[in-house]
Length: 308
Image 1 (cartoon, rainbow, N blue to C red):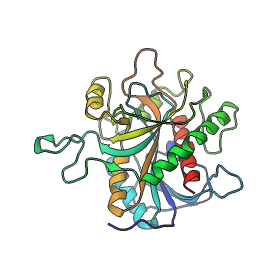
Image 2 (tube, one colour; image 1 turned 60 degrees about the vertical axis):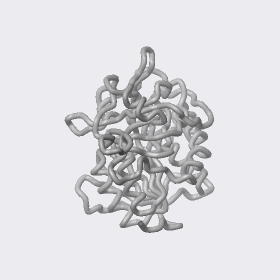
Image 3 (cartoon, rainbow, N blue to C red; image 1 turned 120 degrees about the horizontal axis):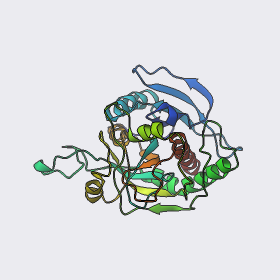
């Protein structure tokens, strides 16, 4: 294991182009990753404070899935020695009380579909690996300090038609809930269908606009699960029981967390909730992909502003 550098860019990893498009970079330089299907740019992230420059970042588009994410992250960490790694974009909401448009902040990440319990391991634990990969405490603290206000600012700009450059917003945003809340219940939600697309991508294609107003946008802290299958109404109860502290699921974050841990680089995941794994009657179950990604990007900018 190597030590994380005290300086260097922040690596922001997104699975899809639509998620990366939510991040506006200044003085961006196109990079040439040696991996098929991977894209990267380096520049300064648009700052929340016009008086101060934004953080220097490498914006990485990994492709969908655990292997794609780990491979791209390995190259980027080795090439740019980042001071932190952030998994950003969209995911599925797991707790019964989470809403589309909320933002999930990882306290830790686990492989939601891993099961070696027959050999004495915990559910979600890959043999000879940790049960979970913890997010770096300074990054968690910065997210809780900076993300709620940044998310509120994004919603206000979106509501007035003045969303930040590089972010495409839904026409039906609603006011948000100030503050961040720690979640004590939850579960896994995004996965992969036969075409290789993740859950948020699938629902975005089927529902290109938000079906109704989103009542609030809270920051939810908990575990994020990663895997290669959908969590749906058929299996969401099992996942909630197995991982009661999980707030969201995707197909990349835990693989990126494991890669960052191998390099000794601080990690966190910040995901906008674009769909729900087990919606109840009367609950909005989908948000347009670009708006959920824009909320993740706003929260990341707030995190980095608080981090300094």
